[in-house]
Length: 121
Image (cartoon, rainbow, N blue to C red; front, side, top):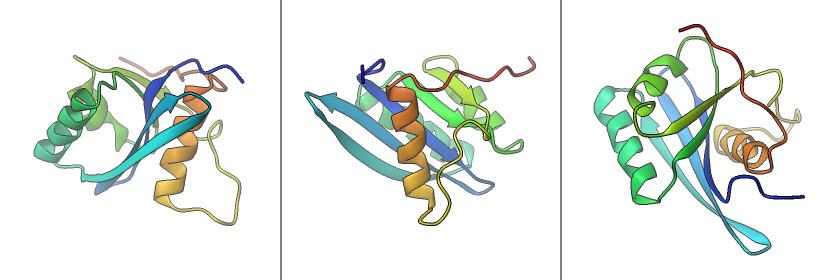
């Protein structure tokens, strides 16, 4: 498969925290960096700085309820944020957790397998 985004990030957002996985494609095998952040503004700003420090300007985020909105609002001025419909990025049932979900979301985005969702402005 063709890599559409060589450096990108998949984000799984919850009420009190978010889990992010930066994916850097180096040759055939991708390199994954995972971190967990709080959803308080100062922590989201740390998340934004982590993305910039890793030269990651493309983020794919699952639109979980209303919890993605503050993260989107803080990132949108510098980072290209794409919102995913949860139905399109749903992981396979069974062996599922937040870190694996963020990796799965990032892998789908990296390979261009899902498109962004519409959101009201």
